[in-house]
View 1 (cartoon, rainbow, N blue to C red):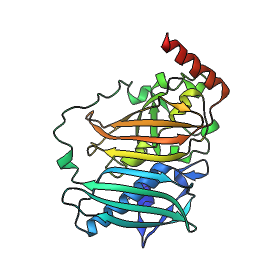
View 2: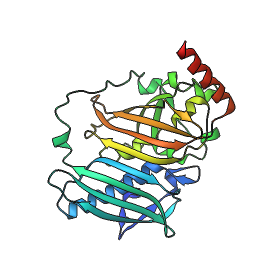
View 3: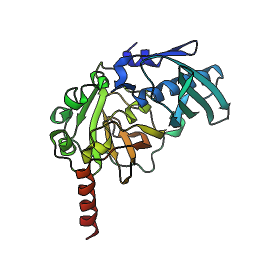
View 4: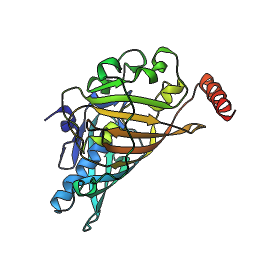
Length: 279
């Protein structure tokens, strides 16, 4: 069992959220989505139904803290091809998230590939910028457990030179050698720094709602990711993510709505960028 498997384990409806998965003071939302997906999958096994998550939707109601959490699962529908369950994760009698996941036979739904988005070109992982704790990232303990290598072309924000283009590309994997699987994909979809970092907004970006799709079982090795945003309006932005595995297969994709506090210089830069594109 790895640290990630440990944090996903529930005993009598209780999970232990350890502080190794925090960003600032809160547990990473991706960990919570994987926890809820795993709990629902186990409930499906009891019902002899499909156990591979193919789609999920999560509403975050409050930040989760390190410590015990109550995980409650309700099977909403058992179908011949698709089944659905809802999971709530609570602490101190307060619901932290609601998570609905649909399950199927993933192998039967991942072939053949008719149309697929090509993966982005990236330098080799050892030529990319490692994400590490330090400075503004000191409280991101998650970085001790996840190996993130960001494309140098999209990491200017880390040295005070944000590109203001709303795109980040990176390699990602667990540091302890745990290989990616279906259960870990919800976590990886939410594991990169917020794409609003590319505008110089180096603060917490709390997720409000998250929707993801699992498209194939990931092969062993590095995962390749691209996250983008095209609309940062007021204090909200959308973030789209796509993950490719070592076969260059699309294995997961997502969209989330999150909050952000944009710095004034980022707003000026974004407007200038829009004007330049309009010419």
